[in-house]
Length: 114
Length: 113
Image 1 (cartoon, rainbow over the protein chains, first blue to last red):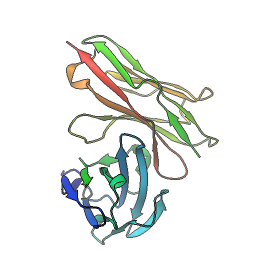
Image 2: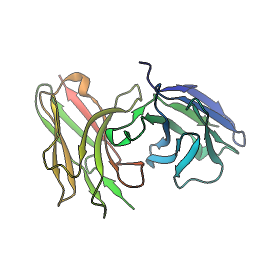
Image 3: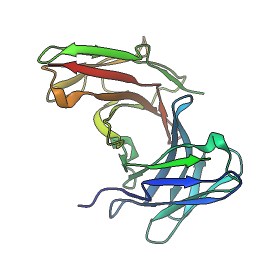
């Protein structure tokens, strides 16, 4: 069974640009969550999607957005990039009603904003 | 809002020995789940063990076990017979009614051969 796949693994962008990150969950998993990991702030919840609907959102500015497609694949977009957006972005998926059993994470996308 | 605190930024242990990582959390909820995740240099977060708050029995997964003290809001991880492959960042996480994981700041575990 394939794991959670995140693409790309590394990305370098310039301030002011926008970026789109992709996450393909485990087959059958309909919930996809996104987390930002930085040395200073640690791991912070961005948002969660379930069946193409945003079910929960963290405390991030509107520049951070996401969506989920009918095949459960998810994308997150960051517009007008700032230096502080440099981070590891992790995606996690879980089966319906099984979030309490833990989420399966991908290996993340390392975003560097210069 | 729920918070999770890991008071040990770094820990080290000799191979084959036992180490305990500490975690405390703050919540007013009665129904929640607690997790320990491991993040090796490959960056992928790997679930180590989980605990349901309504269960008094401490969870165990092979060499990994927890000491869950609900009243004290404490959730420590014990790793027995430490192996070189256990070296990683370990994160304690809470999941309650908000349906999201709240993580601690992590503990970097080093295994000395």
